[in-house]
Amino acid sequence: MKVLTCALLLELALASTASAAEPVAQTFNAPADRVWTVVEAVLKQLGWEIDKKDRTIGMIGTDSRRMDGQNYGVYATGRRHRLTLYVKAASDNRTTVTVERELFKHERILWFDKDEPVGTVSDKHDVERSILSAIAKAL
Image 1 (spheres, rainbow, N blue to C red):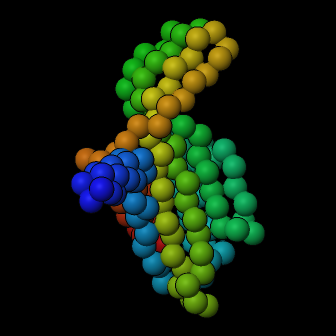
Image 2 (cartoon, rainbow, N blue to C red; image 1 turned 30 degrees about the horizontal axis):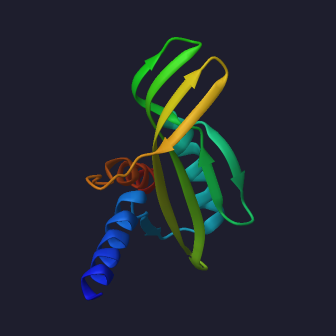
C-alpha cells in the first residue's frame, strides 16, 4: 500500500513539472499604464503579434511563432510557442510583469489545426528573460 501511494505521488510530481514551465516575473519602478504601453511596444518591436489583450485584468497574449518544422501551405508540422504576459500594479509606482510561455507541437493538414502541449523540463526561460530585459531597457 505504501509503495503504491509513493509511486502515485512521484508520478503526480513528475507530471506536474513536465506539463508547464514556471512563469518568470520582474518588478519595474514605473506605473502600470506606462509599463503596459512599453510591453505592447516591445512585443511588436521583437516581432510578436498581439492576439488578445485585456487591460482590465492586465493580460496580453501573442500569436504563436514557429520554432522549428516546415510549412508547405496546406500542410505544416513543427514546434511552436506563444506568450502570455500579465501586467499588475505592485504599488503606485511599481509594476510586476509576468511572462508565461506555452510550447506545443503543431500540425496542420488542409485547414485543420492540431496542437499538443510539449513539456519544457529543460527550459532555461531564455525567451521570457529576453522579453523582460527588453522591457527594462525600454523603460
